Image 1 (tube, helix red, strand yellow):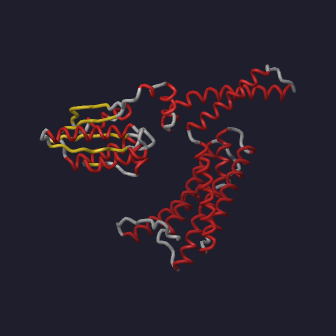
Image 2 (cartoon, rainbow, N blue to C red; image 1 turned 90 degrees about the horizontal axis):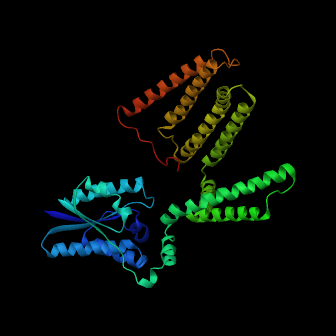
Image 3 (cartoon, rainbow, N blue to C red; image 1 turned 30 degrees about the vertical axis):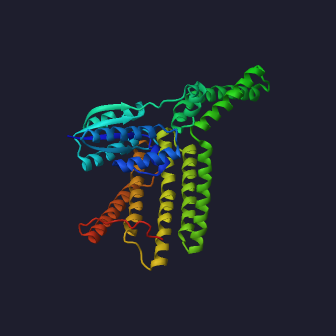
Length: 382
């Protein structure tokens, strides 16, 4: 009977701190991971979990049993994503090792929450939770709480429970003050209430910023803007004319939204009529913007390669066909809800042209593929 000693790192501390990717199979690889993780973060409980699993593995080998060891790594976004990754890695380990039973080693309830994933695939004969021993002087509440809240997953679980109520209370107080001052020109709330609301608002905002690392995310956003600007400059220098088409497409898409908004506010009587007027004014500038966006890549590809990509006509024609069908539906619903200022016969023209264009595109693709799968050429404009 072959036994699998299985460690589960559901939040992927191993991958984030060492660069190793699961599954990690074999004593040598697991020992290397534990050593590197211990050097990267000596206080991470997963270090002790892996070392404990290695100890159990060595004991079983010493007893003459057939045994293997493996560590599964999930994802930093603990939840369904991590569980899918763990299930996939477990299937890979079972396929390679082919054990009869498993011993599950974990450092807490979070890793043990995937017990059902393991037990549904292999019989578990032993579960061990590794608890790290600490010096009594370090077991103070302040120390434990401080260390816990250094972990991003802990902050995201608990800080919003405090920050959101404080933020909501502070926001209500500040809005009340603003409304009173705007309507009456006087401040009727006591100064202590105003100060308490302001403090609650600032403290709640700070806790939410800390919970979701908004400062770091904003810094990453600025880095992305800088990288996009560099790419924009490189595109101009390298002769990529798609940049100009993209700018035109963005302008057209923004224009389509404002045209639709103007129609929504000023035309129609009911909400459905207003929506249909919005869609009718929004649709064609938006479709034209999409066509400009794709045309930029087509022109760039032709200038650089001297030929057009094989999927140019299906993509651009498909966008136009979708626009025609949506236009036909908008026209039809408009008649049903009593919109009378529609050109006679427009719906018939739209649906006939749309079906004809879709038929031409389907025939074109079929003749090119002859039953084979046509692959889109990724990056064909570069």
